[in-house]
Length: 77
Image (cartoon, rainbow, N blue to C red; front, side, top):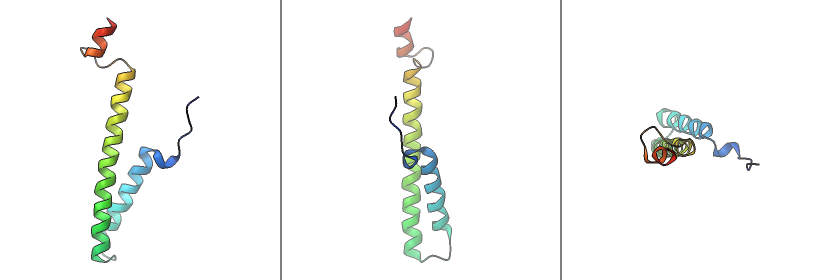
């Protein structure tokens, strides 16, 4: 059985953190340094989310045997 993952490790939580950080960066009620740090955090979480989604896509493609015409599917034929 697969190990149970925390919700903190999910792409949905990363997307939530990205939205919150962009919201804080765009808020004029915060001090300038807080908006800059929130912007840096927003960019970091957005990049991390993109990497996680790309890794998941690659893993699923590998598990499925790869796209037609790829080296992985040529081995199966």
